[in-house]
Image (cartoon, rainbow, N blue to C red; front, side, top):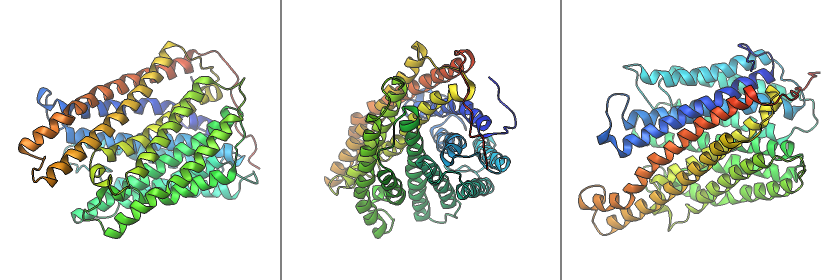
Amino acid sequence: MKLKIIPKSEQDLSKFFLVLFPVFLIFSLGTQFLRDAYFSFSNLLPNNQIFNYGFLDRLYNQLTFGLTASIILLLSFSYLFSKSIGRLLTIFPLIFFASIGLVGTELLDVFLNFVPGVTMYNFGNSSLLINLKIISLVGLFLFASINLLIKKEAVIFHSAQYIYGGLLFYLISLLVISKKQVVFSDVLLTNVFYTSTHIYVTLSLIFLGITHFLMTKTFDSTLFSRTLSSITFWGFLFLLPWSSAKYYYGSVLPNWLENVSIYLSFSILIPLLAFIVNYLKTIVSRDLENSNAVLLKLVNFSVSLFIFTNLLNIVSGFDNLLPILGLTNYVNLVSQGYLASMFFSIIALSYYLIPKLFGREVTFKSLDNIALGGLKFGYLLLLLNNLFIGINSGYIWNAGANTGSPTIYGEGFNLAWNLIGINYSLSTFISLTLFVSSSLFFLSMIKAITSGNVTKVEEMVVSSE
């Protein structure tokens, strides 16, 4: 396995991010396990400035939605973008330094959590680092725009369109959290738009970019409809940013924003149906003899999670369900659903890229199947468990409020905890399953890269004329 300290091509840069991804996936899911353990069993575990639920929750958010998400975005950008525009990336050295700048500031943001006296926030520790991230993303977005303007192909492949949109909304999410927050309504509004722009839109566009590449190039199939793909892109781009405000209905948010969020959430069904039809019709045209069954299952699973998550986002807008689901774990469920669908799409892309970049064949054996099976089982159980917690906690809280017996303290709280307490404990063991499975996935990747059968390395686009 050869990795260059300073990559000289998209292929070298893709190798770098491909190795980084499983490493930080382990850190992310390991932090999630510690966080859940300190929520359910804090009285049995040592507590200090680092080992407590609040610190670990903020650390998990930064590791997952900041550092790991940026690595996935840059991996998909470095490999898929030049493939989609039919040429090597122009001004590659500047693209490399901008990419390292983004990952470096996200990593520094994580390290600053452990420095005493530094004020901690969910989305960043200092305005200086946020500004550095913004500068890096502005650079990447401008360089991507230049490459689109001088593209070689008459029509770009849709993967580039989705990745380009992902860069844009990652930048928008950073601009959102860079604003000064004075009162609680400012904090809530920032949380709403950060969730919708960074988690809902950015992660969805990354997923869609990777999936459009995999469902065509990996399985030798032809994209069924460019029109449906455009409907999917523009539909999610304009509708998802508004869909998270509905979960705070009746709060200090403006009424118009809450109502717009509800009505536009129903419209998500349009781009979702366009994507489903396009995906199914495209997959049907695949080359049955040369299709990798394991990769097909991974892509199908990630698509199923994405569809499931969007349906949850849509149905939560009904007025008889929203009072029950708002401000509960149901909100986390939707975010985790978009995250999981992106994770499984990049895992499928990672296995696809090993022979292309490292010249090593991937043969799925016991270790690989256990790792993938554990991740699938863990995330499926995680989503169903959060669904149960969200529905039951919301129902009993509303029932208690309607009868004049609040469930946030006293006997009402004990009744609520007796109903959902076991599910919070179960979350800890689910997170442990995900952590162990991610460690096995890392070993699976290393095994394939270092000891797989030698095969021909893919040549990147050779001409930049």
